[in-house]
Amino acid sequence: MLELDLSAEIHSLRTTFDNIREVVDVDGQRAEVAKLEERAADPDLWNDQENAQKVTSALSHHKAAIRKIESAASRLDDLEVMVDLANEMDDEDAATEARTELAALETTIQDLEVQTLLDGEYDERAAVVTIRAGAGGDDATDFAEMLMRMYLRWAERNSYSTKVLDTSYAEGAGIKSATFEIDAPYAFGVLSVEAGTHRLARISPFGSADKRQTSFAAVEVIPLMEEATEVDIPENDIRVDVFRSSGPGGQSVNTTDSAVRITHIPTGIVISMQNEKSQIQNRAAAMRLLQTRLLLLQREQEAAKKKELAGNITASWGDQIRSYFLYGQQLVKDLRTGYEMTQPDQVFDGDLEGLINAGIRWRKRADND
Image 1 (cartoon, helix red, strand yellow):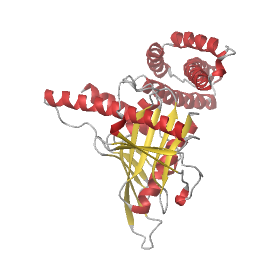
Image 2 (cartoon, one colour):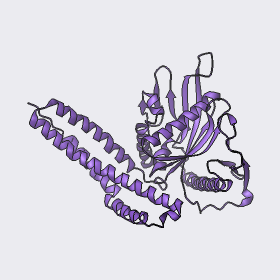
Image 3 (cartoon, one colour):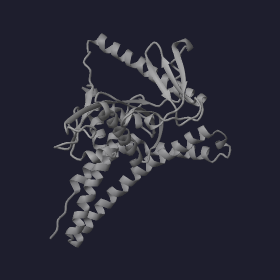
Image 4 (cartoon, helix red, strand yellow):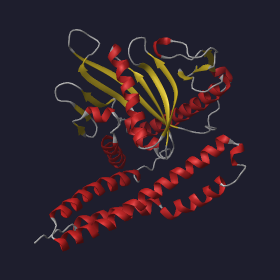
């Protein structure tokens, strides 16, 4: 006689889920959806396309958040029914199905729980990600392109919209650098744990000696700010250069000088933008990104000063955060959390949830220590 008892596990999941639902504030989300739907129904909304896109995007994000909560609640109820039916029918196949659903629900609710840990000042914003090749020659520029694809695939798997802002192609393989937006609620909070130096170890496909090659790439993640009005940038502090957009191998893809490079002379920060159609649009987008970086730099300096005055100058983040091994053991290991994945191909195809969630939990514990 089958006696499947998952009551303790289901009770634990319900307790966690109830806490999540309280933090997410589903009623508040529904109220926001009602307001946004009213704005979206305004026939004059699309007279301002930029504002219309913001309204429809926000509406879509709020609806998606509600669907996730409602789906988890429904699956929890269904799981209890599955257990009862398995016991009534004395059906081992049904019991196996219930155990499988329990494991899947545990993963779903863990993912939802991680989102409740994102309570930083800018965590709820969209993200701007910049990837730069480091030491390692062609392997490093190829690795930088692999990382770019990895994050874009992660966004695609989660149905997040992306926009490539700037790409600097290497003369050989891959890219020197790239900057792109990921537009989703809490994209910055989620991806900020990816910031740092990434290391790749593999047998180089670019050499004939079949020797192991180690290469590096840096990942920078900043929040997307519509207006960084707190930062005033005098015209004398910047140098603006215009040039033609380029594609792989340095080929020109634009017959006009529409791409813009802004250099902030006091800090040396350089922002390039070539995605927009006109030089004016590229300059405006580059200035907005420069304001964001200067605002964050200002806040980082203030935070560092506070730590110095408090006598705590120990950095909580190391330069190298993760290693990717593509020879022998085939492993991806996060050096902060100890989290490992033994299928690098899946990681490079955007399967980052485990690594990211472990990073968010690690950061939260570090902040609380």
